[in-house]
Amino acid sequence: MKIPDKLKSRKLILAVAGAVLPPLLSYLSAEVDMGEALRLSCAAIIAYCVSQGFVDGKTMEGWIPPKLKDDGSE
Image (tube, rainbow, N blue to C red; front, top):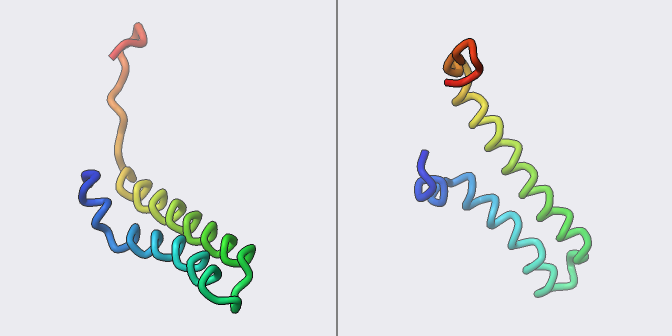
């Protein structure tokens, strides 16, 4: 997957929204504490990183690295 495709992924768009909306809503209303909003934003970013790492790991599953020559060079 190329970088422009990753920028258009639903997962990234939702992660950005999940990171931006809690502090924004906290700023606009007193319903949510700013500290709690920042914790929610961090959770969204961490969830994106973990899920993207899982997807990338599954993509590489079964990949065999090229063998090195006996002298250690490729």
